[in-house]
Amino acid sequence: MPIEAVDEPPVLPVAEGHPERSDAARNRQLLLDAAEQLVREHGADGVTMDAVARRAGVGKGTVFRRFGNRAGLMLALLDQSERKLQGAYMFGPPPLGPGAPAAERLVAFGRARLAGIEVEGEMRRAADDPGRFSTAPYNVMRTHVALLLRDAGTEGDIPLLADALLGCLDAALVLHQTRVLGYTLDRIGDNWERLVRTVVPGRQYSDRHGELA
Image 1 (spheres, helix red, strand yellow):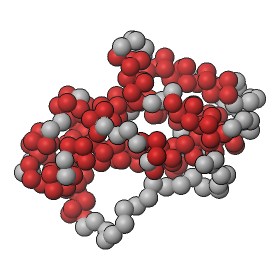
Image 2 (cartoon, rainbow, N blue to C red):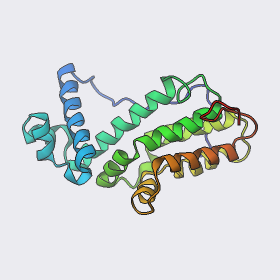
Image 3 (cartoon, rainbow, N blue to C red):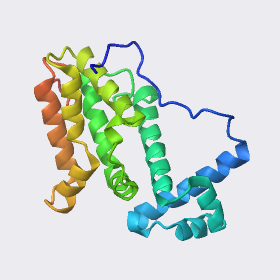
Image 4 (tube, helix red, strand yellow):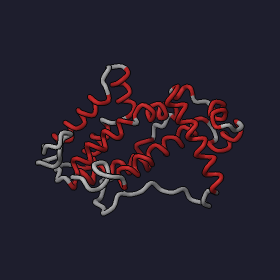
């Protein structure tokens, strides 16, 4: 279904039901922080329910009750990662957040996404999430990119173009490029910027040296 123009980008939906108690929310965040540290240190394969419990200083049963299983834990980590990025590009400072030209924001969005790709790729691989293109986080990013393309005056089938651009930032692809093909994230980010410059018309934004493109 084509993306309709909207005044404000959507926000990830809040889970239905009663609000989480403050102590429960703190415990959940403690577990997620412990799991994220383990992903950064050892990769997704080093994240077990036992390891998370030990790092957080709780019993293993607490982790299972909170997330159900390891895949549920990984999906919760992915959700947290997506929400952090979403908050940055919706409400953070420019050029990633509002206040910069649309094309400059697109460049910053790609570079910000690449900055967390190692951790996200590990989590996505462990979560085995084949339906991610139908999820709220992906659709929020797709709408954000489509809105920026429209703001920049880009022509063509904007929803398909947004998908094509996001495909360049797919975690599995980027991990293959870095780990197998030997590209650096900076080089991939530079390629993202060249792609945005090609797609977006006119003198829309400044490069990293402050000169108009």
